[in-house]
Image (cartoon, rainbow, N blue to C red; front, side, top):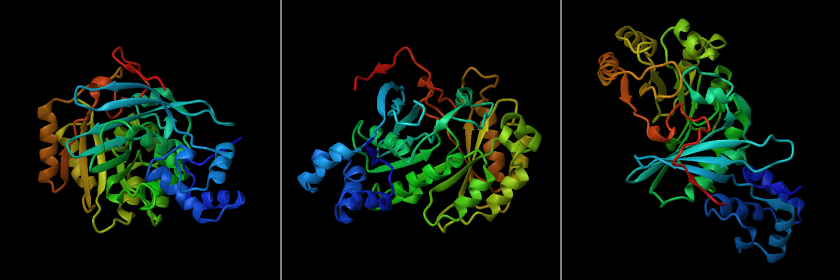
Length: 353
């Protein structure tokens, strides 16, 4: 079975290259070609000797996901359904990625698992359950496939906020982010890569010790344990006190703030009392809050009114908490936060590989 080079750390590539009788520096040439130049066909890696390219054709592969459908939003966002390549020992799976371009940048929302096991009640992805973890190559492959679509932008942001809980697929997620942040590969700044977690405390503590890591966002969504456990069962294992203590110990870089995501569910967690409790919970933390009005789906929740959203934000700001309203893009094609559930849409554009 050919070895898949996508997602292999540089050190692993070096071992493969040496095993194939080549000098170590050939690994860096392949690494740079895949991620910096985005060349995926070995015959096009013309700085490699022809004999080595022929060997790679026989012994290796670059397992990019296959785009099967795309859904274009009226706001310019695109939701991609991607079929993962078949691999020995891995269950066939599909995932989603969302491209949100603007005038001078694009933000890519990427999945780290097929489905999700965390079971947040307001999120449609929970209805899929967990199919399986993605490999580092499958995480990076989503980015590479999407970046091939549309024009280049001066700046690319990556948010690990698609399907799945990144910290429950820790090794693959961190391998992928190290490659993203490596100047010899993608070379994306740590300021532009964000990992979002539902609050896996051991994973947060482990991430805190990483010398190379993305920014951290915490999906909070409630201000009491009773309330949070009702919509996020993970809170029963890692309650608010444990979660916030891990956040207080988290070593922020000089330029960095923790991001707390708070999905506003109409009539459930959007009251003035909720806002005041949130101010108290975050007191003393170098943090900002992204308020996300719930994105509609076939679940028993309501979208909060704009007036309630603004009052909530103003209460946080008056309490000294930096707060911003983030209206999700791609809602009309089920590509917004909490909507990724592999749903087909009537107007989907088929893609023929």
